Length: 102
Image 1 (cartoon, helix red, strand yellow):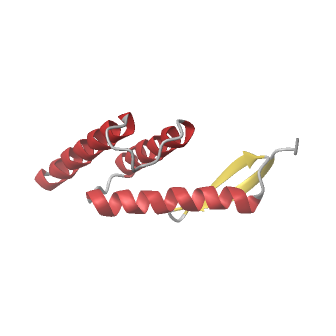
Image 2: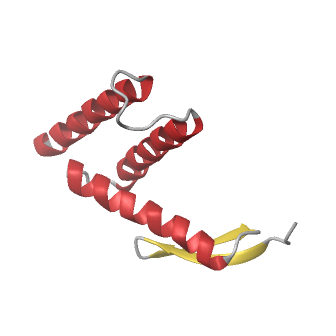
């Protein structure tokens, strides 16, 4: 097992130092995926609060992780992750409506 080292990654313009036994390139790829997903959530919902964006992004990425672990693909209609997607969409709509009324 490789020793953990401190690696700097940048997510949405902010630098974070992470202790990891992964390569810097691998960890930055993960950080880039997170940043891209956060931008997608921000654009899709119009949400500007960083915490809301982070939580919605976490929910989206967790949904994908559950699908992968359960061996499901997004094309399987009626699977439990589809209910999660519907719930996520409702939460995003409520957040967008709340931002519009503020």
